[in-house]
Length: 320
Image (tube, rainbow, N blue to C red; front, side, top):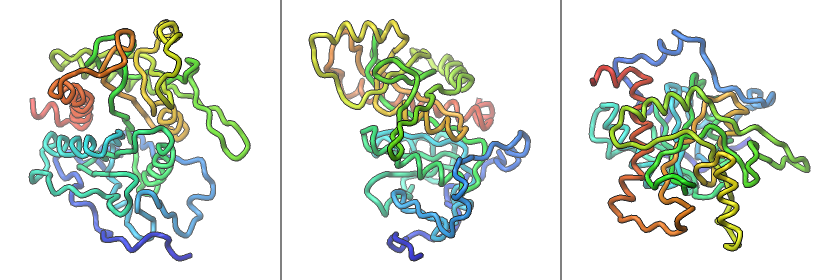
């Protein structure tokens, strides 16, 4: 079957940002029991070609193991500019050659998503809306499978609205809940409603919390995150609703956590959601922070994840 993708402008050589530092990731994989990305689709490996259309990638047009086989950390966020900034930040933090300004968007052939590779890290943006996220995750997880990646950690980083906590607080999600405070994600498949768990990796959450304690003036907590598809309507009963959410353990609100947790859990991927709060919904609905404060808050999840990644690969200890 002919490819439905336009001819790619990229060759099939390994990505030039493949990590070549003192940590051998293949050796690292063999030291522990490998946890490859498993997809519950018996037909996938029998395909002659798998076209990852929305990522502008494919199993015939690209050598996915050579390009992505060393990926260990996938960071997903909303804004393309923010995720490119995170890629540049990680390039510097990992001590890779060059200034990183020539990092290319791997998905440049499509206007749907952006993807940047920095050594063992993928920085991926998705539109600010819960609905395109399953499409991106579907193809992204298949990409990791085809690339034969192992021991991958998925992390959603972004911003959120807080409930009963100070603006600038970083919330590490233990369970993503829906608008009824239930720990599941309902997905419609054909004419069936499939319910999937949205619990996230507790050990990973604790590791991230411990990393946060090493950063000065960095308020961080573990709590439930509520995922909604829209802002609230009906101001009359809003405060009562927020009080019930807080009592149920919810500490922040965003729009992607349930589907992210459900899909990662389905494929056995370790996953975390780390979002900074820009306001306390008990106090107001408007973000009235100055530009400088807003920028600093938005960088907090990036800083935490950077420290976590450096610890995981042993780079943090060598720098210390």
